[in-house]
Length: 382
Image: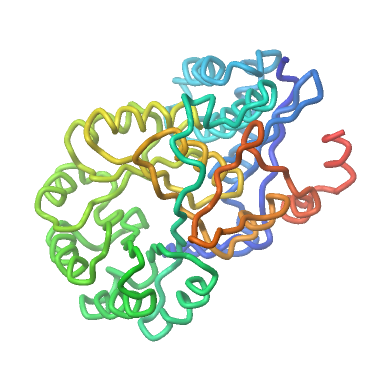
């Protein structure tokens, strides 16, 4: 099975708010789906956390390297793409695009072997996993309206982030967390994401330490992106001093970037994003490295249905990865996958057990959000 072509489909129209200081608009494209077409007619699907224009540019550079390659060798092909594009710079749009190709190649390998991707990664430790609903922070009085409908849907774990947190005053920060804890109740997991990778983040170590002490009072499970993403020494100090778990790493790419952070003991929980780091092949290496350093691997998942599917399979393959991120309210997650996603009575999400990533693409939804004629998608898919 040979790679014949790789196509990109940027998603637009209902791009969710990001909580960023330069806020996303519905027509902004930050997620792009990848389709790897083969000479046998089989298609593998992947996802990239990068705008369509950058992905298309990256594919033009990568095309001579992947065209005609064996579509059933994801790790080797992805490493070939990395090795031959060092001159383009590690970690940018090239690496992001390789992530989507790699995910799609794993999808193809699973379909060709009749196995779910998680089994190909070495075996499945679980058949279902607890998803945590990922929501933006609002003003304190608005938090119940954000959280209660999601809780009523069956979620038992919640992460709130960005918005006004850390950008106004300590009283506002605590009022938001207090309102969230009261809304979800004492039995639910609650995580807080400061979003310190936002542009011109105003806070530093002392704020993070004081805030971590406050979060402990509300039984917050982890404190995510509490510091500027380059502040390695401060992350090390915070992990040693904080009473809550310290999480981060979503902006890092490839295993080489994660290595110094893991060796330094900067995180309790590391959060690589499969749609950015280099795909499933690279994220598996990062997760293995994390285990060797006593750090839990919980994937970052603010992306698409295909990113979520990849995260579910990765969660099945690692014994202590018992949570996945679920961006609630995004049609790029809820509608792109045919049939959508459903929580069971325990608030758990089943890990697909059918070959490959185990999801089918809803072509009408993809046509709508990629602004591609449905007839063209149907022709591509045979």
